[in-house]
Amino acid sequence: MLKSVKRASGNSPLETVSSSLLSTVLEPPVEEGRLVVLDMGLAAPSTVRFFNQSKCRLHFTALIDSELDKYNREESSYAERVEQFSAALNLQPGIKIDIFLFWDLFCYLNKSAIDALMEVLSPFVHDASRAHSIGLLNARQQMPFYEYGVASVGQLSQYPKTTFQPPVYVHSRRDFNKLLGCLSVDKSCLLADGRVENILLVNR
Image (cartoon, rainbow, N blue to C red; front, side, top):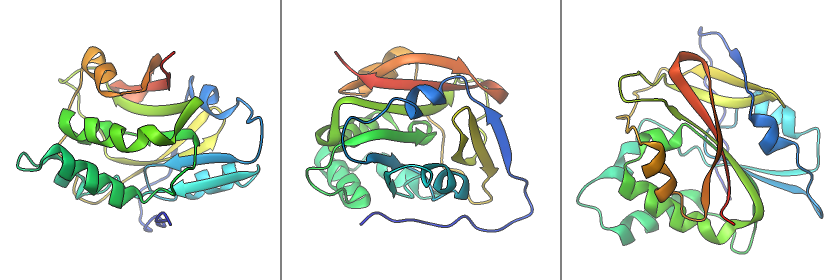
């Protein structure tokens, strides 16, 4: 069973940010059964509230934390990374995921780590799977360290984290697409602070 972690209390304000692309991920209907959502972050209250309005199976991995850089260790082999991600995600065999909320996860993983992660996730992708991610436009910009959530169909919630921020890896769009395996960037749009949001769809 996937971890569900509550946000720690603090004095930093919860912010909402308009998103031009989030609705592309959230609005398409599911033909049968309940929606299956995989959120790579913590169990943000806004996300829980949003998906509680519909028939949904919601999983939180709490993968985005201050120890995320452990997946980038040069001494780790590809097989070791795959094993690490498999254990951390602990996905139920045979399930198919409709929505992946990667948030800024890819910013904290090097190419080898992303490759291993997508290898682990590929069996859980189906033809109509879609995903949302956040990255940087270029290497000159700073990546703020937020906990993200879904505030509404057209809004993200973000809450500044006070824990140690892992090293940031900036990937060009070309390199990023090569690393996504069965997914690829369909659309991108600028957010505040030089960040970019991406919609990822299954390769046809």
